[in-house]
Length: 389
Ligand SMILES: *Cc1c(COP(=O)(O)O)cnc(C)c1O
Image: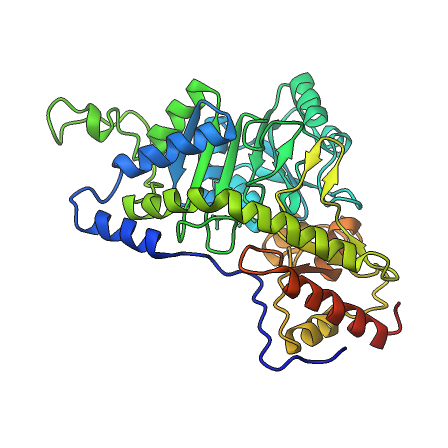
């Protein structure tokens, strides 16, 4: 069977929110505590336990968590932070916001992750930190990265935006560096509408992050002896999460095991079904100690451009298969960064290949195995029409 199934609709991502979330938000709205209250505290303590760290701190997004992590690493003007060339722009923008320079490195062809060798080769006397990205949920080789970072005295920040549910030799991403940063944007593993979390084992990092998250006050709401009276001890931001968001997050945590079961079953089926297509590379779901959080299945078309990604995506979409692109521009080649830090057209070839030729296919918990089989069938059919087997 091939061709379009009428009305078939397979969205790339769709948050699963039910009665529980609605009731939890209703309760927040009918109370008096709308921000930095008990639900944020409970969300933080449950998250910390799940990741296996001392501190989890809610934030307004993963971007603001990354920003706070860099500030806690004392990154400022004149410093360099190593970041992958192929990632969400937030990974690099947050370095710029600190007045520091993002130093891009190319990623590994097989996994899309940075390697310890590439990190080490980019270290200069100005390097303060590296922000690693667990690409599409597959943890980087963190033992090797940590060894390099230790040798050179630089901090490791983990961008875990797509790495919830992943595993690294029995430990969780978010517990493997100085700090981990998670995203609860609607299309991620779990959502709080917008929102993020910073995880750390380091008491000093946690102290700084909590202060700078909320204006740099000396005392939190519950610590003030006279209500409304506080001092300001440092420059800070308002990067907090609201109680309604945390209430949604708590319900989503209850669903996470079920979400992960579905993601694993779906992605296994999809990768098996796509294997063997001529010239197609799927990023692995496991590598050494790393087990992926299964954010999506990434199918990368040939580097020589012999298959046009735009056409494949258009045909998949026409058959009801939703897709995404991670990420559509290799950051050193993005207009903003290219103007500020000029590079040649051929620089960062692997990041360029992935950004030009990768198609992200859905495997989220809103989908079932019949959806995976349909995607496989359509993908084979389309590739055959383009002369591939
Ligand atoms: C989504 C994403 C971010 C940004 O997360 P927000 O919560 O939207 O700020 C950062 N890094 C990576 C790798 C992402 O995928």
